[in-house]
Length: 176
Image (cartoon, rainbow, N blue to C red):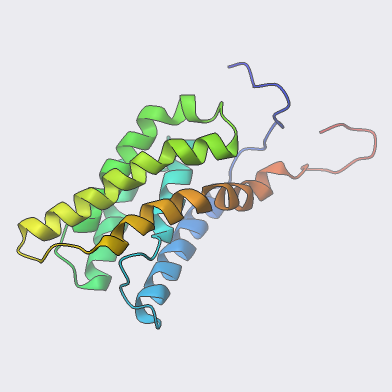
């Protein structure tokens, strides 16, 4: 594949870093659920954001199976309907795999605009499952979560790509 002009050549992602960042995102979600925000409808889903990032950048290492497992863990933690987050994360992962080649050609702002519908679909699925299970209608603050996740996309991308941007053996005479 030909790289876009001006894009830096990245080191391969280490599986330990990928999985530790996903576990850290899971822990952040769990801590946010227990904090003073509780289960606020407008709160961004950090795990969905990290899962989407790694599914886009490393689809062979993080895919729908990992999304399903992490979704079940979130369901158990929140005491939600079993499979609610699993379905949302699996659909998010599937859609990310479908667009991952095209998405990487765009700038961070354009990528954020293109992942916004994916977050909307994932949240919509979770709301639909809750509604079909007999939960009441979600209020208007639920529309803020996908927008906040899309706005966090550039920051998360820069943060999670930092280890791959470093030279393996820094040298003053080598351009990489």
